[in-house]
Image (cartoon, rainbow, N blue to C red; front, side, top):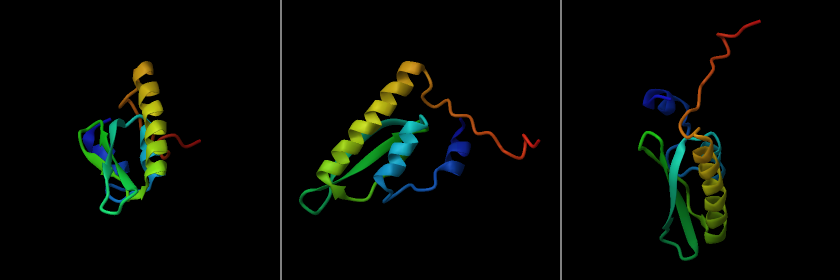
Length: 99
């Protein structure tokens, strides 16, 4: 997948939901994810590095939520790496395949 295609389909880049970043990992476009502290005690956020080197971050959530989300994301990343599918998402335009 090219950087331009990826930019076209990423709908949120900053202050995203944890589920959005999990979904990006699920389709194989997240290379790595890290947790950062927020200003408010007990809150953290995720920062994901995508296959093109760009970053997507979440809003601040309770630490436990963010840590659980990181575990889920790391499972998806590991699965994509083991299958050799990291970054090999293919976008199919539905207008191309009309019946």
